[in-house]
Picture 1: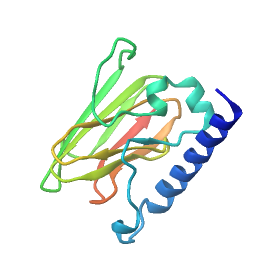
Picture 2: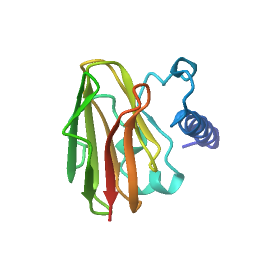
Picture 3: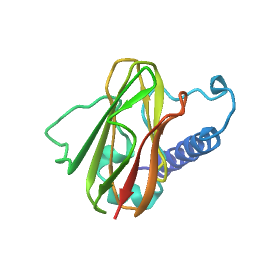
Picture 4: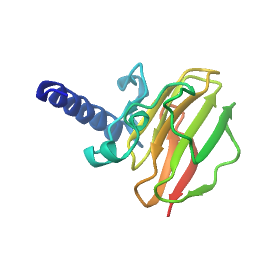
Length: 157
C-alpha cells in the first residue's frame, strides 16, 4: 500500500470517526448528518491490523465467501415498529472472538457499535451486518442513530 493510499485511508477514517462521534447521542436534527452509502469503520490502526480485512470494511449485507473466516458469535436483531427483538439486554462474548451483528429494520437507519466505532447503513427491510474481532474488553452499546434505539449492550470479557 502506498504512502498516499495510507494517508487517504487514515484521513477518511478520521473524518468518519468525527462524524460518528459528533452524531452519536446528540439531540440534533438527524438530517444534518447523512450516513455514508457503505458501511463504515473507523477502528484504530491496531485494531485494523489484528482484525480480519472484513472488520475494517464491514459489508452492508451478510455474505459468505471462501475467504470469510468462521464467525464465533452471530447476533441477529430485528426492529419493527420501534420494537427491538430480541428485547434489549446484555450479550457477552469472549475477548478475541469474531463477532457478526446482523440487523433488519422496518425503516432506514444506521447501526453503530460504540467503542469499536463501527457502523453500517440499515436499508429498510434489508439485513445489514458488521463483523469485527472483539479485541477490547468492556461494555459497549449497539444502537441505531436515526431512531436512537439501544439494540443491546455488548459485554466483552
